[in-house]
Amino acid sequence: MRLAHRPSRLAAALAVVALLLAGCGGNDDIPPGAGETSTLTVFAAASLTEAFTAIKPDFEAAGDGVTVRFNFAGSQALAGQIQQGAPADVFASADTANMEKLTAAGLVDGEPAPFAGNQLQIAVAKGNPEGVKGLADLARTDLKVVLGAEEVPAGKYARQALDKAGVTVQPASLEENVKAAVTKVGLGEADATIVYVTDVTAAKGSVEGVDIPEGQNVAATYPVAVVKGSGNAAAGKAFTDYLRSEAGQSKLQTFGFLPAAN
Image (cartoon, rainbow, N blue to C red; front, side, top):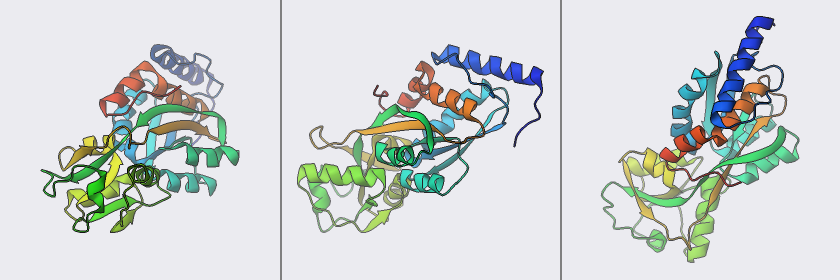
């Protein structure tokens, strides 16, 4: 919804967003139009659910009435929705491949910026009743293992890790995002899965994590960009800058994310 153009309100909005970016170490050059739209719609990878939900009140408090609305799902699903014209202001992906699809199609403004990293971990039931010690155990025929579908970033990364370890797994099911995979293990519908370290942390004890050695692990890079044609591009830029600011990085790292790679 576009608010009526009132110079005094616009000036106040510009000042607040500029202060936000200055305090976060972001860019003080705010493009015209900041604060004209009240809702910022962010399409974000499912693994960002808890971290972004925690960031939301901090960003909104400094945003002069800008309300952040999230759409969390697998990065491949979100990219597809944006390609089909879904109204999004910002896209935060769990991999570079899905962001590159939108970049190639001319659907993002500017160069996507990395804002976080992640690594993989095996998620098992609380107490690890099946005694899973590493990736090799996932080939056991007595284990029910679920994985992300091949087009899901975590599923793609999981297969890369299994290839590094020389392990072949026959998954019982293929999930559309990491949250679905973790939920199946937490509910006892599966014995193990491969997800991000942050997903195991976010599960808050409903599952446990089994570490994957550095030589077998896969690093995930999370990029973010403002979507082309956004009705709230200035606030979208402020949000992407906030994610890369000291305050944003600190918040993300409390949820287990790694620092952004520059």
